[in-house]
Image 1 (cartoon, rainbow, N blue to C red):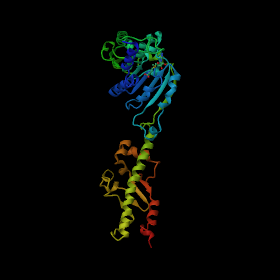
Image 2: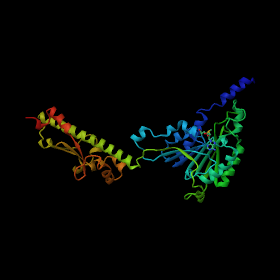
Image 3: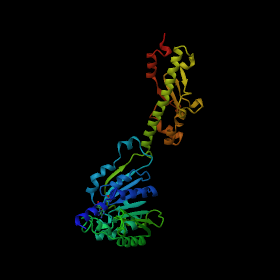
Image 4: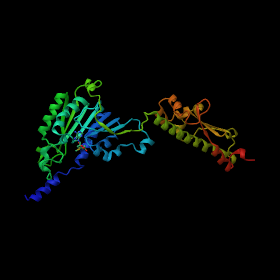
Length: 390
Ligand code: SAM
Protein backbone atom coordinates (compact mmCIF):
# COMPACT_ATOMS: atom_id res chain seq x y z
CA UNK A 1 0.00 0.00 0.00
CA UNK A 2 1.24 3.50 -0.86
CA UNK A 3 2.73 5.30 2.17
CA UNK A 4 0.39 8.30 1.97
CA UNK A 5 -2.70 6.07 1.83
CA UNK A 6 -1.45 4.07 4.80
CA UNK A 7 -0.93 7.24 6.88
CA UNK A 8 -4.36 8.62 5.91
CA UNK A 9 -5.95 5.40 7.02
CA UNK A 10 -4.16 5.50 10.36
CA UNK A 11 -5.02 9.16 10.94
CA UNK A 12 -8.64 8.27 10.38
CA UNK A 13 -8.61 5.26 12.65
CA UNK A 14 -7.12 7.02 15.66
CA UNK A 15 -9.53 9.93 15.90
CA UNK A 16 -11.38 9.66 19.20
CA UNK A 17 -14.76 11.23 19.73
CA UNK A 18 -15.07 12.82 22.21
CA UNK A 19 -11.33 13.54 22.44
CA UNK A 20 -9.46 11.20 24.73
CA UNK A 21 -8.70 13.83 27.37
CA UNK A 22 -12.43 14.50 27.73
CA UNK A 23 -13.10 10.77 27.98
CA UNK A 24 -10.56 10.58 30.84
CA UNK A 25 -12.32 13.38 32.73
CA UNK A 26 -15.66 11.72 32.10
CA UNK A 27 -14.26 8.45 33.44
CA UNK A 28 -13.26 10.22 36.68
CA UNK A 29 -16.61 11.97 36.91
CA UNK A 30 -18.40 8.62 36.66
CA UNK A 31 -16.28 7.20 39.47
CA UNK A 32 -17.02 10.29 41.59
CA UNK A 33 -20.75 9.94 40.98
CA UNK A 34 -20.55 6.27 41.90
CA UNK A 35 -18.37 6.48 45.02
CA UNK A 36 -19.33 9.96 46.25
CA UNK A 37 -15.96 11.02 47.70
CA UNK A 38 -16.02 14.17 49.84
CA UNK A 39 -12.35 15.04 49.48
CA UNK A 40 -10.71 14.71 46.07
CA UNK A 41 -7.16 15.64 45.03
CA UNK A 42 -5.93 15.85 41.45
CA UNK A 43 -2.16 15.40 41.21
CA UNK A 44 -0.51 16.96 38.16
CA UNK A 45 -3.67 19.03 37.71
CA UNK A 46 -2.04 21.26 35.03
CA UNK A 47 -4.57 23.92 33.94
CA UNK A 48 -7.23 22.73 36.41
CA UNK A 49 -9.72 21.52 33.81
CA UNK A 50 -10.57 18.32 35.65
CA UNK A 51 -10.93 20.26 38.91
CA UNK A 52 -13.31 22.68 37.19
CA UNK A 53 -15.48 19.76 36.03
CA UNK A 54 -15.43 18.17 39.47
CA UNK A 55 -16.52 21.31 41.30
CA UNK A 56 -20.02 20.63 39.94
CA UNK A 57 -20.18 17.20 41.63
CA UNK A 58 -22.34 17.85 44.67
CA UNK A 59 -20.77 15.20 46.88
CA UNK A 60 -17.36 16.92 46.86
CA UNK A 61 -16.64 19.32 49.73
CA UNK A 62 -12.88 19.65 49.32
CA UNK A 63 -11.16 19.79 45.95
CA UNK A 64 -7.40 20.12 45.84
CA UNK A 65 -5.06 20.43 42.88
CA UNK A 66 -1.31 19.89 42.96
CA UNK A 67 1.19 20.59 40.22
CA UNK A 68 4.90 21.26 40.04
CA UNK A 69 4.24 24.20 37.73
CA UNK A 70 2.67 27.29 39.28
CA UNK A 71 2.45 28.97 35.88
CA UNK A 72 0.40 26.22 34.26
CA UNK A 73 -2.06 26.19 37.17
CA UNK A 74 -2.41 29.97 37.05
CA UNK A 75 -3.45 29.94 33.38
CA UNK A 76 -7.06 29.07 34.11
CA UNK A 77 -7.37 28.95 37.88
CA UNK A 78 -9.80 31.90 37.79
CA UNK A 79 -12.36 29.34 36.55
CA UNK A 80 -12.33 27.87 40.05
CA UNK A 81 -13.70 30.99 41.77
CA UNK A 82 -17.36 31.02 42.78
CA UNK A 83 -19.68 32.75 40.28
CA UNK A 84 -22.23 35.47 41.13
CA UNK A 85 -24.94 32.79 40.98
CA UNK A 86 -23.17 30.86 43.76
CA UNK A 87 -23.63 33.89 46.02
CA UNK A 88 -27.22 34.55 44.94
CA UNK A 89 -28.25 30.96 45.55
CA UNK A 90 -25.76 29.36 47.94
CA UNK A 91 -25.61 25.61 47.81
CA UNK A 92 -26.52 23.25 50.68
CA UNK A 93 -23.04 21.73 50.57
CA UNK A 94 -19.82 23.44 51.52
CA UNK A 95 -17.01 23.49 48.96
CA UNK A 96 -13.41 24.59 49.31
CA UNK A 97 -11.06 24.55 46.32
CA UNK A 98 -7.32 24.79 46.91
CA UNK A 99 -4.30 24.69 44.61
CA UNK A 100 -0.82 23.84 45.82
CA UNK A 101 2.44 24.11 43.96
CA UNK A 102 4.71 21.20 44.79
CA UNK A 103 5.91 17.76 43.76
CA UNK A 104 4.20 14.40 44.13
CA UNK A 105 7.59 13.16 45.28
CA UNK A 106 7.26 15.18 48.49
CA UNK A 107 5.09 14.50 51.52
CA UNK A 108 2.98 17.37 52.79
CA UNK A 109 0.25 17.12 55.45
CA UNK A 110 -2.04 19.14 53.16
CA UNK A 111 -2.54 15.96 51.18
CA UNK A 112 -3.85 13.78 54.01
CA UNK A 113 -7.41 12.59 54.51
CA UNK A 114 -8.53 12.31 50.87
CA UNK A 115 -11.15 9.85 49.67
CA UNK A 116 -10.01 9.91 46.05
CA UNK A 117 -6.76 10.90 44.34
CA UNK A 118 -6.49 11.19 40.56
CA UNK A 119 -3.23 11.13 38.59
CA UNK A 120 -4.21 11.62 34.97
CA UNK A 121 -1.34 11.40 32.51
CA UNK A 122 1.11 12.37 35.26
CA UNK A 123 3.50 9.51 35.98
CA UNK A 124 5.12 9.53 32.54
CA UNK A 125 6.24 13.13 33.27
CA UNK A 126 8.14 12.10 36.41
CA UNK A 127 11.90 11.85 36.57
CA UNK A 128 13.13 8.42 37.61
CA UNK A 129 13.85 9.58 41.19
CA UNK A 130 10.35 11.10 41.48
CA UNK A 131 8.76 7.96 40.10
CA UNK A 132 10.58 5.91 42.73
CA UNK A 133 9.19 8.14 45.50
CA UNK A 134 5.66 8.30 44.06
CA UNK A 135 4.21 5.06 45.56
CA UNK A 136 5.56 5.89 49.01
CA UNK A 137 4.03 9.38 48.91
CA UNK A 138 0.70 8.62 47.23
CA UNK A 139 -0.08 5.07 48.40
CA UNK A 140 1.87 5.07 51.66
CA UNK A 141 1.59 8.60 53.02
CA UNK A 142 -1.57 10.05 51.46
CA UNK A 143 -3.23 6.62 51.38
CA UNK A 144 -6.62 7.73 50.05
CA UNK A 145 -9.50 5.25 49.74
CA UNK A 146 -9.16 5.27 45.93
CA UNK A 147 -6.39 6.20 43.48
CA UNK A 148 -6.82 6.44 39.74
CA UNK A 149 -3.72 6.48 37.55
CA UNK A 150 -3.77 6.87 33.80
CA UNK A 151 -0.79 6.76 31.44
CA UNK A 152 -0.20 6.19 27.70
CA UNK A 153 -0.05 2.62 26.50
CA UNK A 154 3.08 2.46 24.35
CA UNK A 155 1.77 -0.58 22.46
CA UNK A 156 -0.79 1.72 20.84
CA UNK A 157 1.87 4.15 19.55
CA UNK A 158 2.47 2.46 16.15
CA UNK A 159 -1.15 3.42 15.35
CA UNK A 160 -0.37 7.10 15.97
CA UNK A 161 1.36 8.26 12.78
CA UNK A 162 2.85 11.43 14.27
CA UNK A 163 4.49 9.69 17.24
CA UNK A 164 8.17 8.92 16.85
CA UNK A 165 9.64 8.12 20.29
CA UNK A 166 7.03 9.35 22.82
CA UNK A 167 3.66 11.06 22.48
CA UNK A 168 4.93 14.24 24.19
CA UNK A 169 8.44 15.74 24.39
CA UNK A 170 8.21 15.97 28.22
CA UNK A 171 7.46 12.26 28.65
CA UNK A 172 10.29 10.49 30.45
CA UNK A 173 8.98 7.05 29.47
CA UNK A 174 5.92 5.33 28.05
CA UNK A 175 4.98 1.87 29.24
CA UNK A 176 3.50 -1.20 27.62
CA UNK A 177 0.55 -2.79 29.42
CA UNK A 178 2.83 -5.36 31.03
CA UNK A 179 5.22 -2.68 32.32
CA UNK A 180 2.43 -0.55 33.79
CA UNK A 181 0.68 -3.54 35.30
CA UNK A 182 3.86 -4.86 36.93
CA UNK A 183 4.57 -1.46 38.45
CA UNK A 184 0.95 -1.04 39.60
CA UNK A 185 0.64 -4.55 41.05
CA UNK A 186 3.86 -4.06 42.97
CA UNK A 187 2.70 -0.70 44.45
CA UNK A 188 -0.71 -2.18 45.29
CA UNK A 189 0.82 -5.18 47.06
CA UNK A 190 3.30 -3.05 49.00
CA UNK A 191 0.69 -0.60 50.28
CA UNK A 192 -2.30 -2.91 50.69
CA UNK A 193 -4.47 -1.87 47.75
CA UNK A 194 -6.35 -3.84 45.13
CA UNK A 195 -5.97 -2.74 41.51
CA UNK A 196 -8.10 -3.21 38.43
CA UNK A 197 -6.99 -2.31 34.93
CA UNK A 198 -9.03 -0.71 32.22
CA UNK A 199 -8.51 1.88 29.51
CA UNK A 200 -9.96 4.42 27.10
CA UNK A 201 -9.62 4.81 23.35
CA UNK A 202 -10.25 1.40 21.86
CA UNK A 203 -7.98 0.33 18.97
CA UNK A 204 -9.43 0.13 15.46
CA UNK A 205 -10.95 -3.15 14.25
CA UNK A 206 -8.33 -5.75 13.57
CA UNK A 207 -5.80 -4.10 15.93
CA UNK A 208 -7.34 -5.27 19.20
CA UNK A 209 -4.06 -6.83 20.35
CA UNK A 210 -2.53 -3.38 21.11
CA UNK A 211 -5.00 -2.55 23.86
CA UNK A 212 -6.43 0.88 24.77
CA UNK A 213 -4.67 4.12 23.83
CA UNK A 214 -4.82 5.25 27.49
CA UNK A 215 -4.27 2.61 30.15
CA UNK A 216 -5.79 3.07 33.58
CA UNK A 217 -5.32 1.48 37.00
CA UNK A 218 -8.04 1.92 39.62
CA UNK A 219 -6.64 1.21 43.08
CA UNK A 220 -8.82 0.65 46.14
CA UNK A 221 -7.40 0.66 49.65
CA UNK A 222 -8.04 -2.66 51.37
CA UNK A 223 -8.02 -1.45 54.94
CA UNK A 224 -10.20 1.01 56.84
CA UNK A 225 -8.43 4.05 58.17
CA UNK A 226 -9.03 5.62 61.57
CA UNK A 227 -7.45 9.05 61.62
CA UNK A 228 -4.08 9.71 60.09
CA UNK A 229 -0.97 7.52 60.33
CA UNK A 230 1.62 8.18 63.02
CA UNK A 231 4.07 9.20 60.30
CA UNK A 232 2.25 12.55 60.19
CA UNK A 233 4.34 13.66 63.16
CA UNK A 234 7.40 13.41 60.95
CA UNK A 235 5.77 15.41 58.17
CA UNK A 236 4.06 18.20 60.02
CA UNK A 237 5.91 20.76 57.98
CA UNK A 238 4.14 22.15 54.91
CA UNK A 239 6.42 21.97 51.91
CA UNK A 240 3.83 22.87 49.27
CA UNK A 241 3.07 26.46 48.42
CA UNK A 242 -0.64 27.27 48.43
CA UNK A 243 -1.39 29.49 45.46
CA UNK A 244 -5.20 29.51 45.43
CA UNK A 245 -8.05 29.05 47.86
CA UNK A 246 -11.77 29.63 47.30
CA UNK A 247 -14.42 28.91 49.91
CA UNK A 248 -17.79 28.70 48.21
CA UNK A 249 -20.87 30.28 49.78
CA UNK A 250 -22.84 27.58 51.52
CA UNK A 251 -26.03 27.39 53.54
CA UNK A 252 -23.95 25.60 56.17
CA UNK A 253 -22.46 29.03 56.88
CA UNK A 254 -24.96 30.95 59.06
CA UNK A 255 -24.20 34.22 57.27
CA UNK A 256 -25.45 32.82 53.93
CA UNK A 257 -28.26 30.84 55.53
CA UNK A 258 -29.57 34.01 57.19
CA UNK A 259 -29.54 35.93 53.90
CA UNK A 260 -31.32 33.07 52.11
CA UNK A 261 -33.95 32.76 54.86
CA UNK A 262 -34.62 36.51 55.06
CA UNK A 263 -34.94 36.70 51.25
CA UNK A 264 -37.33 33.75 51.18
CA UNK A 265 -39.39 35.09 54.12
CA UNK A 266 -39.73 38.53 52.54
CA UNK A 267 -40.60 37.06 49.15
CA UNK A 268 -43.16 34.65 50.59
CA UNK A 269 -44.72 37.29 52.84
CA UNK A 270 -45.06 39.74 50.01
CA UNK A 271 -46.71 37.13 47.80
CA UNK A 272 -49.25 36.28 50.48
CA UNK A 273 -49.78 39.94 51.40
CA UNK A 274 -50.36 40.78 47.74
CA UNK A 275 -53.15 38.24 47.55
CA UNK A 276 -54.69 39.52 50.72
CA UNK A 277 -54.61 43.09 49.48
CA UNK A 278 -56.03 42.13 46.08
CA UNK A 279 -58.83 40.34 47.84
CA UNK A 280 -59.55 43.38 49.99
CA UNK A 281 -59.55 45.60 46.92
CA UNK A 282 -62.07 43.45 45.10
CA UNK A 283 -64.24 43.42 48.24
CA UNK A 284 -64.11 47.21 48.40
CA UNK A 285 -65.14 47.38 44.77
CA UNK A 286 -68.13 45.14 45.45
CA UNK A 287 -69.13 47.23 48.50
CA UNK A 288 -68.73 50.46 46.52
CA UNK A 289 -70.83 49.09 43.67
CA UNK A 290 -73.49 47.89 46.09
CA UNK A 291 -72.96 44.21 45.20
CA UNK A 292 -71.96 43.36 48.77
CA UNK A 293 -72.19 44.91 52.20
CA UNK A 294 -69.55 43.77 54.65
CA UNK A 295 -68.55 46.65 56.90
CA UNK A 296 -66.32 44.69 59.32
CA UNK A 297 -64.21 43.61 56.38
CA UNK A 298 -63.42 47.20 55.63
CA UNK A 299 -61.04 47.64 58.54
CA UNK A 300 -59.58 44.16 58.82
CA UNK A 301 -59.54 41.03 56.76
CA UNK A 302 -58.26 37.45 56.82
CA UNK A 303 -56.84 35.60 53.91
CA UNK A 304 -59.12 32.72 53.08
CA UNK A 305 -60.38 31.08 49.93
CA UNK A 306 -57.60 32.30 47.73
CA UNK A 307 -56.26 30.19 44.97
CA UNK A 308 -52.95 28.73 46.13
CA UNK A 309 -53.72 25.86 48.51
CA UNK A 310 -50.10 25.56 49.68
CA UNK A 311 -50.31 29.05 51.11
CA UNK A 312 -53.78 28.85 52.66
CA UNK A 313 -54.15 25.29 53.86
CA UNK A 314 -54.16 26.18 57.54
CA UNK A 315 -57.67 26.48 58.85
CA UNK A 316 -56.38 27.80 62.12
CA UNK A 317 -57.18 31.56 62.09
CA UNK A 318 -54.22 32.20 64.40
CA UNK A 319 -51.82 31.39 61.62
CA UNK A 320 -53.80 33.26 58.97
CA UNK A 321 -52.39 36.62 57.92
CA UNK A 322 -54.67 39.61 58.34
CA UNK A 323 -54.78 43.33 57.72
CA UNK A 324 -55.28 45.71 60.56
CA UNK A 325 -55.44 49.35 59.55
CA UNK A 326 -52.36 49.95 57.51
CA UNK A 327 -50.46 46.82 58.51
CA UNK A 328 -50.51 43.27 57.26
CA UNK A 329 -49.77 40.79 60.06
CA UNK A 330 -48.02 37.76 58.66
CA UNK A 331 -47.81 35.13 61.42
CA UNK A 332 -44.44 33.39 61.50
CA UNK A 333 -46.28 30.09 61.85
CA UNK A 334 -47.81 30.78 58.44
CA UNK A 335 -44.41 31.59 56.96
CA UNK A 336 -42.91 28.47 58.52
CA UNK A 337 -45.61 26.33 56.87
CA UNK A 338 -44.17 27.24 53.46
CA UNK A 339 -42.04 24.20 52.38
CA UNK A 340 -39.00 26.19 51.18
CA UNK A 341 -38.80 28.15 54.46
CA UNK A 342 -39.21 24.99 56.52
CA UNK A 343 -36.51 23.24 54.49
CA UNK A 344 -34.06 26.10 54.96
CA UNK A 345 -34.68 26.61 58.70
CA UNK A 346 -35.48 23.13 59.95
CA UNK A 347 -37.13 24.44 63.12
CA UNK A 348 -39.48 27.29 63.97
CA UNK A 349 -36.94 28.54 66.55
CA UNK A 350 -34.25 28.83 63.86
CA UNK A 351 -36.63 30.82 61.68
CA UNK A 352 -37.34 33.25 64.57
CA UNK A 353 -33.67 33.56 65.40
CA UNK A 354 -32.53 34.19 61.83
CA UNK A 355 -35.08 36.89 60.97
CA UNK A 356 -35.08 38.75 64.31
CA UNK A 357 -33.49 42.15 63.74
CA UNK A 358 -33.64 41.73 59.96
CA UNK A 359 -37.41 42.30 59.37
CA UNK A 360 -40.13 44.20 61.27
CA UNK A 361 -41.85 41.92 63.79
CA UNK A 362 -44.84 42.36 66.12
CA UNK A 363 -44.04 43.08 69.80
CA UNK A 364 -44.44 39.44 70.79
CA UNK A 365 -42.34 38.35 67.78
CA UNK A 366 -45.08 36.08 66.47
CA UNK A 367 -45.81 37.94 63.21
CA UNK A 368 -43.97 39.80 60.50
CA UNK A 369 -45.38 43.28 59.86
CA UNK A 370 -45.83 44.66 56.36
CA UNK A 371 -46.68 48.32 55.96
CA UNK A 372 -49.41 48.94 53.36
CA UNK A 373 -49.41 52.72 53.33
CA UNK A 374 -48.92 52.80 49.57
CA UNK A 375 -51.67 50.27 49.00
CA UNK A 376 -54.08 52.44 51.01
CA UNK A 377 -53.10 55.47 48.95
CA UNK A 378 -53.90 53.47 45.83
CA UNK A 379 -57.32 52.60 47.24
CA UNK A 380 -57.95 56.23 48.09
CA UNK A 381 -56.93 57.32 44.61
CA UNK A 382 -59.36 54.85 43.13
CA UNK A 383 -62.03 56.08 45.57
CA UNK A 384 -62.31 52.63 47.01
CA UNK A 385 -61.23 53.34 50.53
CA UNK A 386 -64.39 54.20 52.47
CA UNK A 387 -62.74 56.66 54.86
CA UNK A 388 -61.70 58.87 51.96
CA UNK A 389 -65.28 59.13 50.73
CA UNK A 390 -67.31 61.98 52.22
N1 SAM B 1 -3.70 15.86 34.54
C1 SAM B 1 -3.80 16.80 33.46
C2 SAM B 1 -4.96 16.47 32.58
O1 SAM B 1 -5.36 15.32 32.56
O2 SAM B 1 -5.46 17.35 31.89
C3 SAM B 1 -2.60 16.86 32.57
C4 SAM B 1 -1.34 16.48 33.13
S1 SAM B 1 0.07 17.05 32.22
C5 SAM B 1 0.11 15.97 30.89
C6 SAM B 1 1.28 16.58 33.39
C7 SAM B 1 1.37 17.55 34.52
O3 SAM B 1 2.19 16.98 35.55
C8 SAM B 1 2.00 18.86 34.13
O4 SAM B 1 1.13 19.93 34.40
C9 SAM B 1 3.28 18.93 34.96
O5 SAM B 1 3.58 20.23 35.36
C10 SAM B 1 2.92 18.04 36.12
N2 SAM B 1 4.06 17.48 36.86
C11 SAM B 1 5.21 17.04 36.36
N3 SAM B 1 6.01 16.60 37.34
C12 SAM B 1 5.35 16.77 38.50
C13 SAM B 1 5.64 16.51 39.86
N4 SAM B 1 6.80 15.99 40.23
N5 SAM B 1 4.70 16.82 40.78
C14 SAM B 1 3.53 17.36 40.41
N6 SAM B 1 3.21 17.62 39.14
C15 SAM B 1 4.11 17.32 38.20
